[in-house]
Image (spheres, one colour):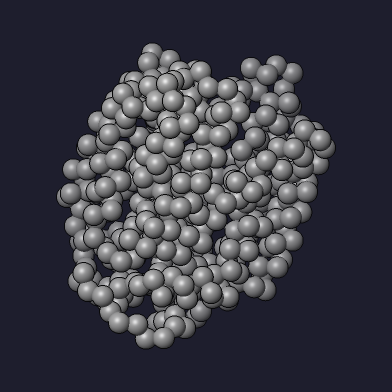
Length: 424
């Protein structure tokens, strides 16, 4: 970790521990939500689909609000405190509120659950990642070298969460609540170096106002970025939703396919952990725009090759590449936003232009993709999706803004009229 100095080593360990714990609790509990809904609340597949659709709607609504709050409060940890406290309430919520409501009044349970899950997880994770990116830049660290501990936390929890779930799902939720309480103490001890030399490059003295958000949405750069997300990231994440169904068809025994897919999930998590060590330096060298374009090329190639694939060995080699794509995409997104958008709206841009747009893709594309799987098969659908990713990558090579050569040019002001500062 060449960017970690003796002065900030302690804070690096703290923020990394925080991210590890957050993803650990997510994997150990919320990561098993679909199984819990089917086995413990006896909901049908259609109703479970409705649950996730409603979760997505509330998440899309809440993420921009979280982003605005983060930009408004700068390096204040108040929003993260709220997210962690909501996470700590996991066990009592699932055991005494969510499950009884789903059994007695399903619609009300779905809505209440969507609100809670968005507060603590679906929007909460985006807030934690955005804060971590800002914290890393403020302290001369690399976001990827912190975020990699989240991948490790997910992998560690995945290794035993299923066994714990078989004993009782309550154990998973209780574990999540306990770890969340510990996470709160870690967050309390985290020091914010608001007086850092580069503070002016990361934190704006002028707090965000609604006029800044309006100007952001009107800007060409915003929609050029959203176009990339719609053409590349949507294909990447939507294809992954049902990839397991396609994967097991390459095995004579479906149980063997399930087992291999699980092993490859562990390999993928390990690849994410390792790639987060390397990817930041790679993106710094080639530039954020080229990083995004490489993601598009890899996604397109992987999906097209998956469509033509006729070997369980080749499909097994392709599966872990998803971990590489995630690392390169996330690091490039944060660096691209930091370079091309005003620091006043960095968090809003991430949660609105990236995170919220991803969930819009779930709502818009998931159902049509499922219909194509049934009508023309996974193979042809993946080839089509891969071609779409490549086409939008080519378009984005023109529409995305070029890398700036001077760091001092980053975070240029928005093209908006002067607005009155609001001091909190």
